[in-house]
Image (cartoon, rainbow, N blue to C red):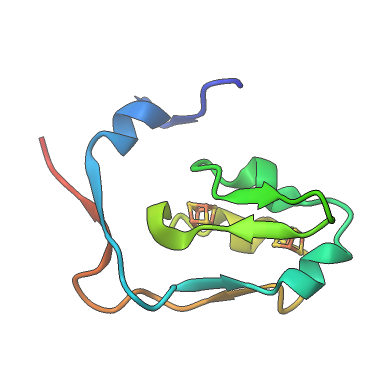
Length: 99
Ligand code: SF4
Ligand code: SF4
């Protein structure tokens, strides 16, 4: 897999500066029924954290716990209603540490 870069920061370096406070309520939900009829599965390659995993029956497994809220999946998905996005509750979700 090619290395993804964010500005001058390699993705692995970026990920080493974050921690995830996993909320009980997923801030992104994915409608597996809509995904089943999706031919592009654009989210699978677009998500820099590889959180969308195609299943053998044509669906998608989604794991919100290591999502760092970049919004890319939401932008690349063309199927209306497939991805529902709400911000995590305060103090939860991704936390960027400095230094
Ligand atoms: S989230 Fe969107 S792009 Fe990804 S499989 Fe579902 S419908 Fe397709
Ligand atoms: S917001 Fe970003 S990290 Fe989270 S699931 Fe979507 S593409 Fe992946």
